[in-house]
Amino acid sequence: MAADFRPDILHIHNIYHQLSPSFLPLAKKIGLPVVMTAHDYKLIAPNYSLFHNGTVCEITKPHRFWRAVSHGCIRGSAAAGVLEAIEMGLHRHLGLYLKNIDKVIAPSVFLRDKFIEYGWPAERLVHVPHFVETAGRESAAGGDYFLFVGRLSAEKGIPTLLRAAAKLKDIPFRLVGTGPEESRLFSLAKELGAANVEFRGFRDGAALAAEYRGARAVVVPSVWYEVFGLVALEAAAYGKPVVASRIGGLPEVVREGETGYLFPVGDADALAERLQKLWNNPDLSSKLGQKARQIVEQDFSPQAHYRRLFEIYNSRQLKN
Image 1 (cartoon, helix red, strand yellow):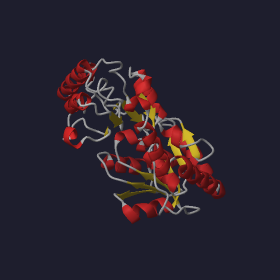
Image 2: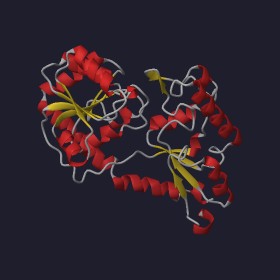
Image 3: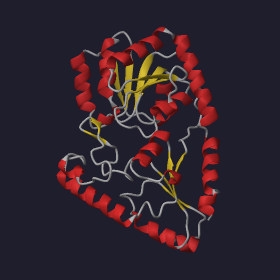
């Protein structure tokens, strides 16, 4: 189809399971430049999240894919590990990605550097952060609760948030989202006596916007290598400061003391301290949130994103 249509560039995203990388050599054969945006770590490890058993896992680094089998890195299943290890080994042997992708777009500098650490050539990688619209996301000062938005899953570090909330019993917390850990997290909140935590379930559209607008700040307590931290960016678009784990790409979105605060991964005491500071200082919270929105408008706008994309599309490496 590409041969008939003759596009200028093929820009792909997650093709691992929905499609197959087998079409990449065909694109190369007809002289079609290929750009790929990476959204996870699948190009460098069988475990695409680099997360296992509640913590960061880089046991297969570098290219020791068979370790995914012995350590049960893929859904805790040796069988799944065998399949992923074979697939990764075959793709690497054939060079399906490395030989046929001209540029990999990394949404964060962290992701770019991690790919280089695992053996990808630096000249093949380019940093282009995600973007968010501020139009229609009017900021609101103040806020009556702290907010978490995301999937209720192990890598999101929600137990850390619940333990911090249990130390701040007079402050309301809202958790927006659903996921496989929901019942366990509900039980943990009860066990901790965190009656100030409200599980709000799934929200989108106007309902989600209302959750953001009513928050004092948004908490991102992740314990995995967040590729970027889109929730932090969305919070900033609403003029809300963010308190986030110092991990992965999050420090690139949350600027310490300027748009929010960072805390050590899994440290509930440090998180509680930063949240208490924002709760006691609504003017400080508003100041950080306003600065966050300003930075979004300058550096993370759709216009800035597309400008960077077209610089890549028009680069000499893709034209030759």
